[in-house]
Length: 190
Image (tube, rainbow, N blue to C red; front, side):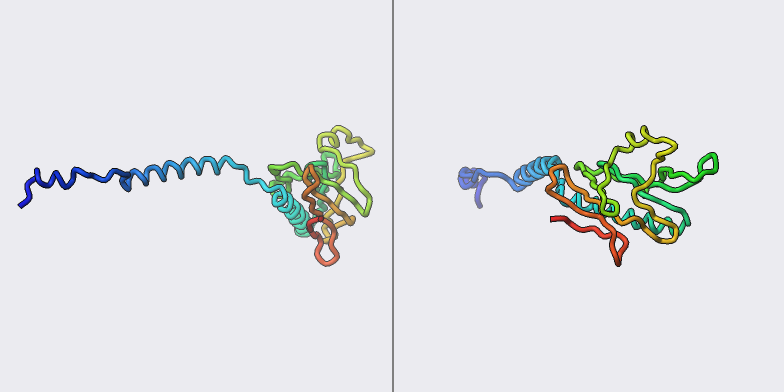
């Protein structure tokens, strides 16, 4: 039989190192630190965001065209340098039909994390765009605010249009335009 004193000679040369629990704690701390660093990195990809914004613009235009048919009302969209606004032709207090901004959460411009610039050609002619605030300040009885593109209750979308969305550097560009088979097409511009 081995006595405790004799056994102590065998264990006197203990191997020094880390236990499994100590290693796991260190790995967990490193993982938490890496996770916080990764969360602070901005994963914005201007090309992807611009493409998604162009596709969303095209889909919203199709939605407005469908809504005009189903509700039997005239809708429209007006572009600004960095956004757009949807309109509806409705009667005002005097009973006259006027274009009014739609208060529908679905039909509105969603702000992106990158600046998006719009360029609009209507029937081949470039349009000078102003911000909505500037346009509202310049409204007169002779020159009321009207949409650039109309979505009529009979299903027509007019006039022909080409909207170019680009980032401020012009590196990423997408076009939303009138299609012959499909009403609205979206494609990248090289």
